[in-house]
Length: 324
Image (cartoon, rainbow, N blue to C red):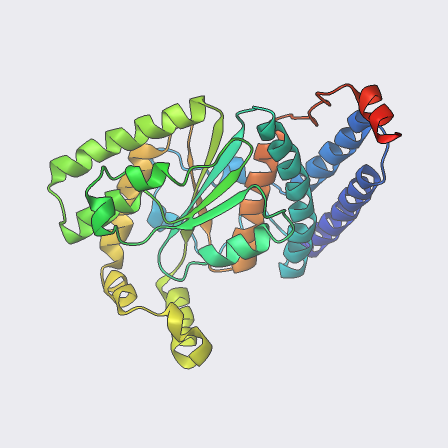
């Protein structure tokens, strides 16, 4: 009963958020429209009993294996409420993305890097499709990292990563990332331990400089269960249209699940910093992981507190020339 009551409150709050967003779209002074948009975003954040920024951020001493993959911490609504949240939040993400992109054109350095990590079939692709369903493709860059090519191996391990970083005003989404170069060598014994140790230091310094230069970094690990992974693997093997998604190497990683969990635990302990924290997001219920990422991204861009850049030409002169 208590959960149902809270669910009704969530729907009521989201209706208010939708009304504020519609008012912001109707026109009026820029300052007023931005204030209405901010109110809409605040109402969306209010549906959480505890914000993901607090609930899911990794703190030293937390244990990956203690996270419940099927949980929905901080959100008391059902899947239908989650779908409505995604729809409203995605619209506001699109608004803030356009503002950030416009400022980037004018030299502002704000930008966002989203790092998505997780075991195979944890839902990284679905997050990209749902969270960014309403954004303008201009200003969005997606890149999936696989096994390094011979050319990439001739360079430092961060070389291929730096080429894919967001430009000013852009959002870059990494499906896997430089963290594969910390975890996989430990599992497969590709490099001696001292090489991996050196990489930990380089990653922290790389991200520290990136954040100091105006790039917000959201590092998200999707926590899935072996049972849920098995279910998705079977779907791929039972559906000819999904065969292309299956790779035998996925089973090799599954066989060493505990080793991967231990390696990722070390990653969180050594690379979760104030300038680039990790978020451990339960992912067995795909709709939940999507709304978490949507909340994190939307509030990050809202907190940039950007406004539309001013006209950098003489408006009266431009109107006069158009009237000729």
